[in-house]
Amino acid sequence: MKTIALVCLVMCLTFGMASSHYYYGHHDHGYHGYRHRVAFTAVTSSSTTYSSGTTIPFTTVKSNYGHAYNSGNYRFTAPSNGVYVFSWSIATHTSYYGHTKLMKNGSTYHQSHCSSGYQQCGATVTIILNKHDQVWLASDSSSLYVYATYSSFSGWKLK
Image (cartoon, rainbow, N blue to C red; front, side, top):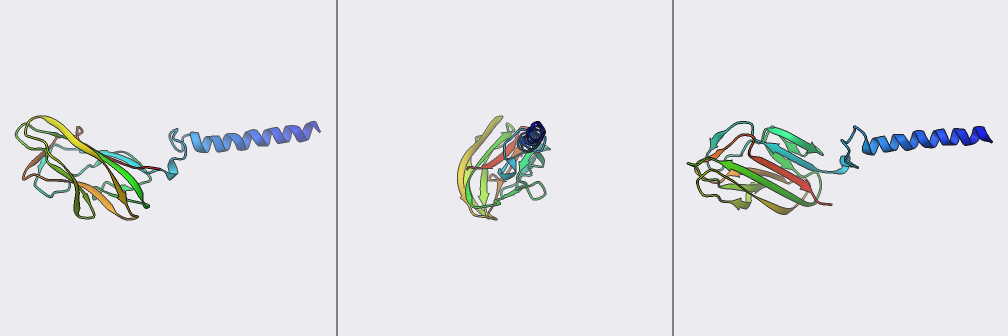
């Protein structure tokens, strides 16, 4: 009887630790169930100007749970239908305006306008997306100057 109890205890501890490790271990950096989450943050890697309509290249990916952000074309592609949140912040130069627009499948969804001067400006919006819809950030001024590493683009799916 003691042997059966000991085997049961060892099995329970082994499987319990294995499942705990799966959810809380190094696989997900401590974020429970991250494999089913969608979230990203990316920043610009160089300071430069962009003409109107140019996609802003957020090339340095800080996080990309769900792998929905593409650092090659700088677009987020919705992996499933749902409500998403996007937030961006652009650091501008004193001689430039900081006009940006959030694009959804090629159409302007939301705009952010900042006057000239050293500023940090942006917006946060909620948006309903269907699977495969694409979202990205583009310049909305004739000449937008973006400071590297101080400008970011983030998004996540609400549950």
